[in-house]
Length: 304
Image 1 (cartoon, helix red, strand yellow):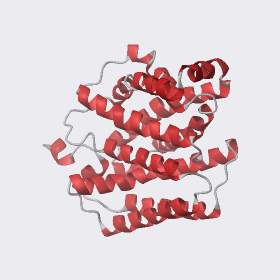
Image 2 (spheres, helix red, strand yellow; image 1 turned 90 degrees about the vertical axis):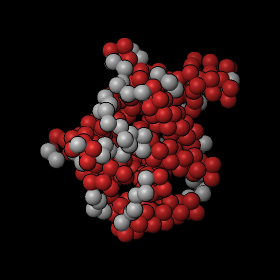
Image 3 (cartoon, one colour; image 1 turned 60 degrees about the vertical axis):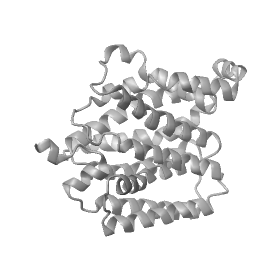
Image 4 (spheres, one colour; image 1 turned 180 degrees about the vertical axis):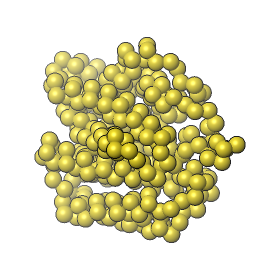
């Protein structure tokens, strides 16, 4: 990789890692579903008027929006709102790699190598340690909410399998952001009530509003688009390991900005998870295996 692309990959992980802190800050003033409503409104307007519709089916746009935006971010926002530390959230979200391997094995007959199984086992041990020893920092509800968010991302990773037509990801990201605002606002209205919505809009802190704008523009549009660009330019095995930087940046940002502190047991668990996922990502795979696990277009079909 050239130096500028390495810098770009690190920047993407910085944006994603610090985004967990941004979400936490935005929840100070706005309830979760209202926060998501504003986030996606800011993400698609006014830029959607200058971006052509993506060259893919409406069903793919809907699935992408449902899994990546609605399911994932609703679970993350609600989990953080209920007390999940931002640092642990950014760490647990990396289990999407485990879920991707397992789903590929179930639905696409992917056969994990021994190193991958060792990595998954170590990561699972780390997640189990967090579940057992982290209870003083979060509840079971928040724990499973974040795992559900990671599972949603894993399902999203499998969306593009068999896609022969190349999709403009910036266009897909912008237009898929058009779907969540209405159901998110309706959910906020049903859960929080009109009075809470009005009070939040009238008494919000500027730091919370800026945090939403940060999530909308940088974490949603800039980071996701840049990551897709890198995946198109390089093979996934070169890019995906950079995602291990996300929980590191998340933990640093939450420590500096939110003054969060992880217990010793959670720090040990974090080491297990990171080592396990690194082993998994550095396990050598054939081109066909790369297709199955990373969701890239089948290189054999491309050659044809």
